[in-house]
Amino acid sequence: MEIYNLQEKQNINSTRDGEDFEAVNLKEAKKIAEKMQVFQGTVLDLTLYGKTVAFTDENGKWTEVL
Image (tube, rainbow, N blue to C red; front, side):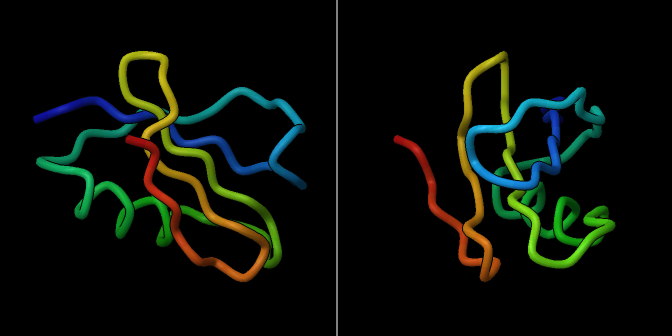
């Protein structure tokens, strides 16, 4: 299991403290992050070991960072 951190932001450049959660892989982490989302139209930023591994746009489409 890996510990991911989820930040829900108004846009990709805003900052906010995130929530940590455990997931087996990135695919599962993205599903959990979508369930944890509170507001519509916000950007989700998913980090692992302090580095962004995936984020969404305002429409909810995921982009993975390689």
